[in-house]
Length: 254
Image (cartoon, rainbow, N blue to C red):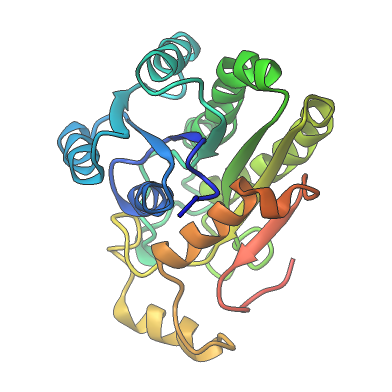
């Protein structure tokens, strides 16, 4: 059986655990070669690569370091083949805990900037490093990971949400510049996921409340979100770019 992804080499930033790991598994199951980027989660990333088999590797780089990202992409090209697809999932350290969030009277600009540095800066560095491969192939796909908090800030996580809102804009402007190269750039915006390390501090009552307000009656899982990422990376979305797809069971509409 021929898979839609068997000729793709996919770089997933922040893929050692949580949502990134679910995305890596989804691509591997569909036959793609998978590069699992990590910053601190070396043991988890190496274990995941071992689980996924010989077409998967773990590669270290801090996405805020442009030189490190360039080196990482060169390693991926050498070990797996030229990367065709980027999924920018990396997240600065963050915990979805509404009771312990930074409020406007205590929030600092460095905290805001750190989130943007990873969300937007990381996307910039990864796109820059992969652009020569996109140009050589005459095609490619970039998928950024956003949040439905931009549309519905039910909990005001100011730093995280502002960074993801900036990433929405960057996704759209990047799609305009990369379109002539045959590269599509889209975003999948998730709701609260059940459960990742980042959402582990969320009280069970919050999950239940969100499920009760959602048309599908349940909270979105990492695997649900991964399916939408595959859609944007697949030939099936060949005429779609600059778009944000909200994947939260219908809780909010973009």
